[in-house]
Length: 101
Image (cartoon, rainbow, N blue to C red; front, side, top):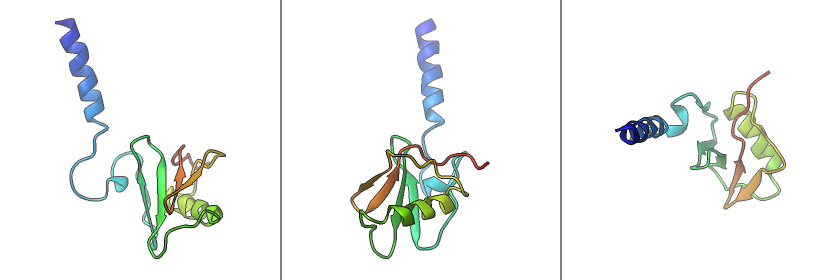
């Protein structure tokens, strides 16, 4: 009986992390992202913020532009670090959005 309660509690906790079908998942919930014309952003399965440019994919050398876009999308505070990476035309910020000071 106790095992069922623990498993049910874990399932409910994880269920709260799941997105609801339809719409832009990045704009819902506590980690709401601001819209920025010309860019799209979403959280991947690991919680990293992935920023893409709509007109043309980012190049590897455009990290500064991607960081500026991520700052705007995060409301002024992307949690940028040395672990930020370029992948398939997008910039990935593993620490997601930080907290504005």
